[in-house]
Image (cartoon, rainbow, N blue to C red; front, top):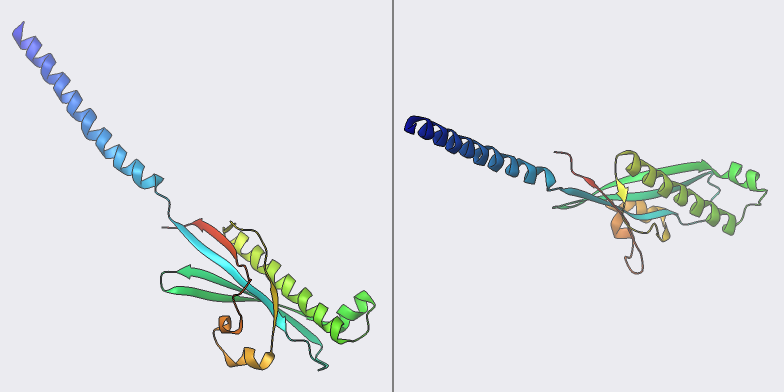
Length: 168
């Protein structure tokens, strides 16, 4: 009878050891799966060129996306361009400073919408209110700088923030 008891006891100890071994391994991998890492980005500005009396027929709007990284922002510019003559014709407007200004605001608004759409298509989820001040920049100043963020004052300007799970 003693050999049966010893065999049964050994079997129980072996099963307990296997249970402890496998449950310890499972906990570690489950903890790794639970820890989520996020990436962040923001649309920092949307802008158009300062309306002038120049008779340019193209109106440009831009939005700037900042992909936040440990080394700083990696910028991407999203552009929208449309024909100013068609804009005036569709709205039955005459050429004026105000019409050119409104067209610039419309172009920057569409560029902003394109940037939001692009981020959404890439899996980014918006996490802040979509409030953004639309700016105007001088075209000569725009052409001077590679980093367009130097053209904007950050006073009273809100960025629109996004996040997504980091792909590993």
